Image (cartoon, rainbow, N blue to C red; front, side):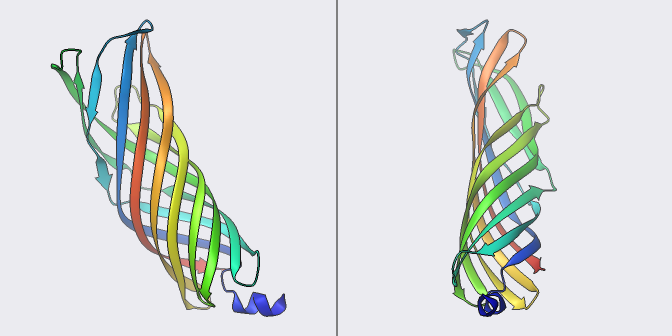
Length: 198
């Protein structure tokens, strides 16, 4: 075990920060009034922008070349609002609003494979959540997140990484007075960043 600890730089605590590009696509469907379908629907545009994702976690060894870790990440920036067009049952435009997102966060379980002593490819899965902004009645969504990435050390305590993430918020029924609708969202992001190992 001492030899493995010396060669595997990824063991222990880490913190990291990254940025890049992301998009979030909401879906608002199944509009109803007093439980009866109204036939109304929403056409949603992508909300996109540059995130600032900070996180930290702990990694332990499964074998000489495999590791597992637990991490928490949060986007400190909001995703800028995008258009939401609301149509009636005859497809006539009734109103146009906008919706953005904030408080994007994820708890993840990560499995990594060392390629060489200072580099690792990894995959992660976890619980994801976010809140809406700019809507007439804001709400929260949760679901799951998946990701793949690559990390490599530039010195014994500092690494750089690149990562692709996909999140799927599960259907949630939103009630506003006598009206209701189902909401979910899909998020995608590509990140590059830097981290520190302790």
